Length: 320
Image (tube, rainbow, N blue to C red; front, side, top):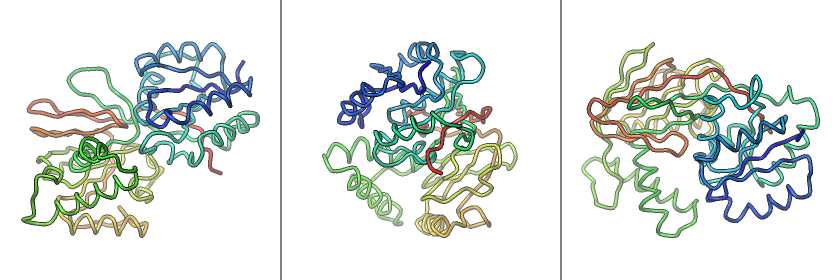
């Protein structure tokens, strides 16, 4: 029986430089079972093989898209007898939102060593349970993840991916330029071809709290403890989906950022800032995109996207 199983996606951006060190570390530790996939379509077969070695912890080494695909397979498949082992995520890729929420930061190889250390002891104090977002659209099987961005946020991510990243700048500088472009696009009457597009109108229905309609600078749905700028969502331990939308307004966006930095996001009503919880969220728009852990989905006329929480899944938190 392997103490830890590691599932790696070599095609992940972060693994282009990291994977040789990961392979060397695995070769030095016989209690670590390493399985590499060539593409995410092989993750189901990888989990079937990993289940045979019955690991105490399953580690995913890839970007958010790899994590999303693995979580979907774990939830929908029946690869392990009973419940799957706790999932740990190595920091990788460009965003690492899931890894950050689980306290996995810094050097991935050091993180893997820490996971081996924890797996040799009682894991109870480090296991946390998280619900996942089940996204359904077009009658296809649900896709699972933990962080969804939509409206202007999705447009900005796509703008950064397709316009800014190809310029060859570092990730940090690319993100700074993207934020600057987004802020410029919020100035009333200011427009230019090089700026992100104006978000399409959306109608968002929450089972508990009615509807929110308009153009939004950003929309977030998550099950992570942290929603924006390190701020915990209001009632972070409440079950269900955590939802936030900010109107397409510079004043509303500044108001939301200030509240997040002060740790007060969602603690009281704010004009232009919508923070809610929901068990069932429906997103409708004639033309809009949402991004769930790196994968893009589109709404259209008569083609809404629905979101529901799943049963909690066990994860391994590396931070104390």
